[in-house]
Structure formats: structure tokens, C-alpha cells
Amino acid sequence: MNSRNAGWRKALYWGIPVLFFVFFFMISRYAPLAGDDWGYAAGGRYNSALMRAWNNYFSWSGRFLSELWGYGIAPHKKVWNVLNAGIFTGIFVMMRQLAGNRRHPLLVPAALGFMILSVPDQLRMQVYTWIMGTTYAIPLFLFLIYIFLLRQYVFEDRLNRAEAVLCAVLNIAVPLYMENAAAMIFGANALVLLYVCFCDRKKVRTVLGYLLISAVGVCLIRFSPGALARSARDHAAFAQLSLFEKIGVNLPSLMTYTFTVYPWFYGILSCILLIWAQSQKQAVRIAVSAVTLLSLAVIFLPLPEMLSWIFWIIYLCMMFAVSFSCGERQDRFFLLFVLLCGCGANAVMLVSPIFAIRSSVYTLFMFMLWGLYLLERTELPAKVSGILAFVCCMAAAVFALRCAMLYRMINRINLKRMSQIQYYAERPDITDLWIMGYPENSVHSADVVEGDDFHDAVFKEYYFLNPDSTLHFYYLKEYDAESILNG
Image: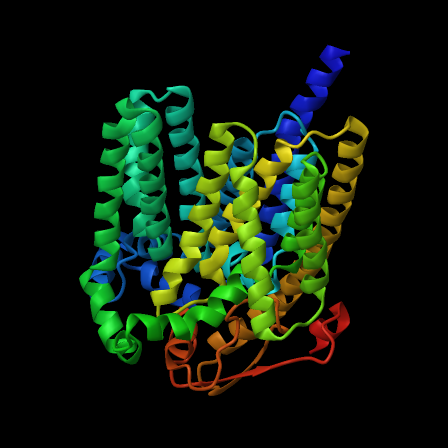
């Protein structure tokens, strides 16, 4: 029996990530280049990716490694197909490892798969299947590796020389991808430093070293000549606002991208909290059950904005309270650590001139990890765990099937669109170019809108079209196979 159980667990351990990789490879393969992808692919086609990224650091952006990714990977779509699938599979595996996968070996990965696949279309388009959106996923993956190593060091006294060097490298690499990822890893180091100061002082020197390295990374991205120049040029009005005025501008985005756009995630998180609450004292059980049951109504019913904000603040306070009351000291610290990292990643966006849904990916995944960690430390009868795992698997399968059908349609449109583009590329004398557009909520920045001169130019450059031609994108009433073929 033990041998059979071990074989079953091993099959799950390796089989689920393989399925995850295959799925992400398929949707990556069908996803077309879009928006900024055209510019980076055209820019990196005949130029050194390193030199272009270096020049951009001094003229456009402090995200040096993101720029390097764009110029180095966007011209090679087939390479990205594999890398993107690998990155998201790595995120899945690291989330599972950090949550623990012993008490509920099927429920935890099933719940995680459901969480990842049920994100809103805007996040899927901007992070999951967009080449330049992958620059948001890479620092998430690297950060998960870092906190895995850091937890191993702080709680288990295990960190060899190679791992210590890797931690130092990650403290520079993560900040050079994205600003709020930079703030998140700096904040993570500060939290761990505070913990070891009280609980294990012999580790203070090492953690302080990592904090200082991450501070260098934060300075490199925040005060890069390109970032400062772009802020002065493109966001001068926002830069002139006071701190409180900036917060006022971004507060609605903070509440939206932290809470209200993720109904499925908060639905399953509330279910996890309800399950956890049943094993607690009566007062805790009643309080948590009341808030989580109310959340299920709030998620799917429209409320006045202010009332919704008040509820979500209460919900977040409940998450902190649960963290303080869960398990051993190490469990409590890790839950608080993950929750604060997630909150910080979005809170820092309050002072950013651009706050889009893709910026919230770190908060969402940290909250996912919080819920999974709590679930793994909740005792459940084996049958109940199995039933819940089955439900999560079915829900994940529904979202996966929906996504697969969507990208199959996208692939049909892309084939039609490429035939049109090839036709015009071979006939540069034609100046009015009619190209099929993608339906709403399918591909991010797939079509050039009127007045967008930059994307108009790079679209033509990437596809070798007449630079003086005029682009016209048309849309179909129905995007079935026959309509796409004949449209």
C-alpha cells in the first residue's frame, strides 16, 4: 500500500507540471506578437540586444533586464514559446513547493491550477501570452526562488555557497525587471531582517547583506537616467502632484487591482478560509465564517464603491488576523511575510504614473500563495480533500478548455491575418491595407488604433510593409472558422 501511495504521489508530482507546461506552450504558440512586441522584435532583428538595452537604460527605462529580454527574445517567437511555458511552469512548481504539498498532494496543485487559470482576460492577455508581458512573470518566478532559498536558510539553516551567491544575484536581477518587484524584494529582505534580529541574530549579517544588495538594485532602476528622463517627458503633470494627490489618483486602481477584478480567486480563497475556520475556536469560527460568507455575496453583487472598499479593507484585516493565529511561529511569520509582500507590491504603485492590471500580478500571486499555505496547514479528512480536489480539477479544466478554444480561434485569425500581411508586403504599391482585427478581450494591443503613430510605424517595420501606407483593421460579427476564412 505504501509503495502504491508513493507511486501515485510521484506521478502527481511530475505529471501535473508536465500538463501545465504543455498547456502554456500551446497558448504561447498560438499567441501572436502584438503592441510593443513589434517594436522590440524589429529593433532587435539586426541590432545587438545588449547595446539596445544599454542605450534604453540612459534614454527610456531603468528596466534593463526587461529591455534586454525584449530585444533578445521578441525576434525569436519560437524560443519564447518554450521559455514562456517554462517560466509559468516554474512559477507553478515554486508556488507548490512554498505552500507545501504533503498533507493535500492533489488539492493544493488543483486549487493552484484553478487560481492561475481563472484570472481576468486582461491579466491573461497582458502577462500570460504577451512577449513583453513576460517581463512581469520573470521577476515573479525569480522572487519565488529567492524566498524559497531564504526560508530554507532562516528556518532550516541550509544555504550552501552556490545558493548564497544565487541569492545575491537575484537581489540585483529582480529589481532590474520591474519597479514594484524591486520594492517587493527590498521589503521582503527588511521583513526577514526584522525576524532574525529577534529570533536568530547570527543570521543578521547575511540578511543585511542581501538587503543592501537589493537597495542597490532599487536605486539602479529608480534613478536610472532613462527613467528620470521619461518621467520628466511623459509624466510631468503626475510628477508635480504631492504624495497625497498621487495616492488619491491611484487609490481606485489600487482597490480594483487588489480586490474587485479577481472574483474567482477571492471565491476560492473565501472557501479556504471557511474550511480553516471550522477547526478554530467558536469566536474565530463565527467571525471568519461571517466575513467570508459575506464576501461570496459581495464578489458577485454590485455595491457602491465606498461600501465595497470598506468591506475589502475588513477582509484584508481578517487575513492578517488569521495569519497571526495560525500554527507555529514559523507558519505565522511566513503567512504575514507573504501577505505583506503582496500588499507592498501594489501599495508602491500608488506613486506610479501608470497602474495597469499587469502590475498587480505580484500581489495576486502572493495572495494565492497565502491561501495555499493556509490550506496545506488545514486538517481535512482524506475523502473531503479528494472531493474538493476533484471540484478544483473540474473548474480548472473548464477554464483551460475555454482558454484553449479561444487561442485556437486566435490562431485561425492569425493565419488569415498573416496571409493578408504577406499579400501587402509583396505589393508595396497598395497604400490602403485592410487587415482582420482580433475580437475584444482576446489579444492585448493586437491592432493599431487611430493616432498611435509609434505602433503604426513598428507594425509596418516588423512586417516589411510600405511605411507610407494606411492601416485599416476590420472586425467580424462572428469569429467562427468559416467567417474567419472568408472574412
